[in-house]
Length: 249
Image 1: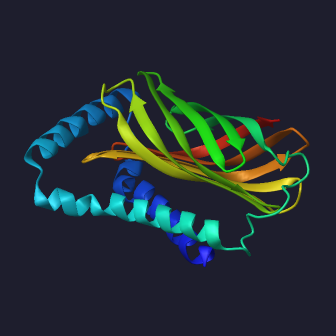
Image 2: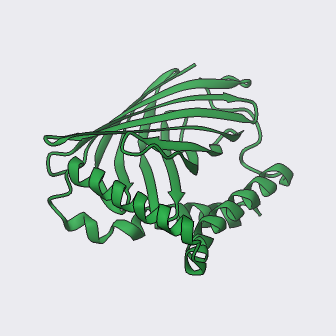
């Protein structure tokens, strides 16, 4: 049963990331300065929408509600499905009690844009905690964003899955946004791991989406990976190749 909801949730995350920014990908003048300007514009729109509380905006936010509903459905299925692949002993190199991990990513987002991101994660049995931070920079300046999250983690011999929610913010705005997301690690073998990390934050018209998808070669307590980084800042989508260094205990 869980398999019926997990693809839907992942598809929702991907569509939420891609749909607002498809047109913006072709623009070459989306500098950090322009992104800051867009964030301020969207924040003003969001404040106005919040004051007016327009019915059509409530319908738009139904997409966010759908994500929360899928989130809850997946949790329910994981907790009651005895045949879930998230039950059993973890792969070699991972403790049965949990793990502490650090992921460091560097990405080239084309047009002289770069990003550095880090994520510190603590998994204790079913409890999942992590802090996320990213700096986007180009010749015009830089933009900082970060999040703190908590949720549930599920670990099995072939799949790690973390579902979480928390608070997100940027240095372009004083407003803290609610966020939610998913992290999945599929162990194709003890050494080769397919990884996905997705974070979504929204407040009316002000929305942020982050995704990392790639393949990692893992040793006993460290690994190197390569993948694709997608970052959507208030409707401006930046895409590029990324390298990842992972450490864990």
